[in-house]
Length: 400
Ligand code: PLP
Image (cartoon, helix red, strand yellow):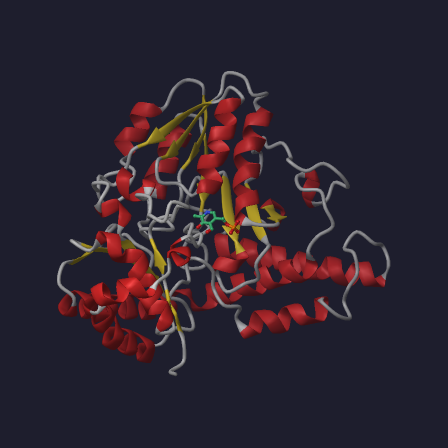
């Protein structure tokens, strides 16, 4: 059996060994609580301070603007709920896009239940929010615009500069869920008027269960968690020192290698795309051809939309891990993806897409092997369908 291939780096990334090495001392001998005044506490405090600097450097922020959290989801909740809270939940209108991650969309639904009005901006067929649509949606009481930097399913990058400048010109705060973008594309807060930015360590070869919200100076944000007053009083809880150290190290590695790594990933991604479209009829790219994450491909299979889950399972049997772009429901059918529907795909097309996402440890040899296996698996799809018991299709495949 050949080595397995992992092409699902948008779901999560493998830890970088350098990150593991940086974390290990904080899982054993350097165990102190950063709030303690003695030597053990000081060691831990120092490590958290260094990690804060590393994350700040990656984003062109100041270290005191980095608030560590337990996930990207928490950072997103903190941004949206914290601003609603700061405005007293009254006379508040928020704007977001129709293709945000559930960490934003479900939080918006919660805000709506508590009296906040929310506008969901449409996107064009490439998944881009049109600045003109934002302009039209802004109201005198719009307090926050939240638009993601890069979409998790289709990989499209939003025009963050234009959108954030429009919000600021209107006197409105701007948040971006940059969980999929941080460490992969340059994001410099010295030139982007972004007030709040969410990130998550496990998407950039760091550990799971740690993230951050960047809160620029002067942004009126109220905390979700109340307690000992850690993280400038914005996020009480004893710090996850090892996780934070891992995030800091992951940020530094990403910053040092970003330009070269992006070129390498674009090369691998385009090789994959050309190879697949040459060998498999009726495959088409979903999302913008160029304004997309370097290692991200989302593909539709015209005429075989219903087969995406079967294809995923057949590839899994061959040791190849990737995602579909849709969520699988308990009724054994794939639901159309709300993201693909928002792009204007009809419900049939919106059911069948595959997401291949490359990361730091993927190689040209893996791409070559994939291009060998993939056309055979697609060709063998129909006879294979009976090999998967119905329970297999129940597996939760919410795309993260
Ligand atoms: N936002 C986006 C765009 C994501 O892709 C994800 C995770 O998949 C999240 C938020 C949630 O991050 P976390 O897994 O750290 O909670």
